Image (tube, rainbow, N blue to C red):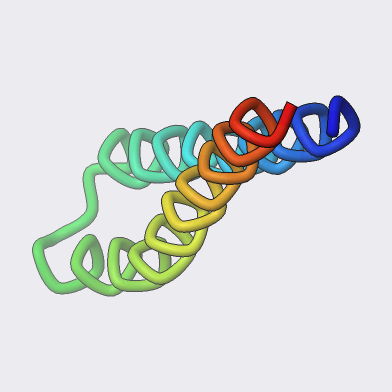
Length: 71
């Protein structure tokens, strides 16, 4: 079950990397000085990826906990 912990950690880190990418993307969009509609369009593109990365992180943490409980 130790492998399950490592797999969960890898999935969690992948989700965390996605969240960091979303943060950096939004910061770049804000620094461009876009008007409200253009900024809204850019942010709408990132929202789905942000939720997906958050879901991936949560699933990874669940896998880690499951691996610890089964050990």
